[in-house]
Length: 280
Image 1 (cartoon, rainbow, N blue to C red):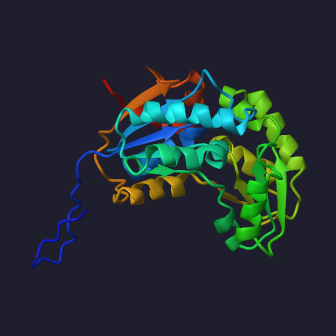
Image 2: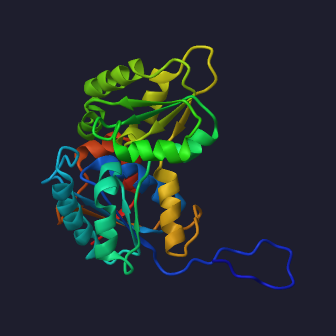
């Protein structure tokens, strides 16, 4: 919010409201991309990260089992009374978003993560969607392509083992998985949609693997910044990247307070959280 002084041509100063608290949830560190986006947009926001190390990975679970795990993780976060909850996982959004909203809203707005197919398709094509094998070819992704990329050449690329390698920060496995997915990506692709939140943590490695010599710069489309901005809109707040960096950090591990997994600090998005004070 801004104060509106009268009789002056100077730019009015930003006036910050009370503390903003944003919670994010995922089975693992895929939520780091959206967390970093929230941190950049609102350095003053208190952050609650709710992970599920006891139940990960969520991908191989049945939709019913995944929804049960997601609800438990969300309720652990909700106990800290956040203003909004971001589901920092594409798979959980597909299977559990309706149940999460039914359980938590209207008290806590729930924001899901959807692959950025619409803005990617707006730039023309051809484009590739890198996603987990479970999501690739799924009715969910097919519907997104039909609704938002009609008339654009789209290749769905299954990224075997990439999310798991990113979660472990296994450099060798990441390189192998990225290289394998790049081999499945047509040479004329100009845009890649990162259809899993884990992939945003290795976006530049994906760019380097897919970029063709002498071709225009490859466009990458993730969801983190848009999701963070949507969370602020849902609670009537605006981005304020110049706000004082006084936000706190709470990490929940299957409901227990703890610390970020060591692998998180392998990535720039995780290291950014070192500047956030641990809530006490």
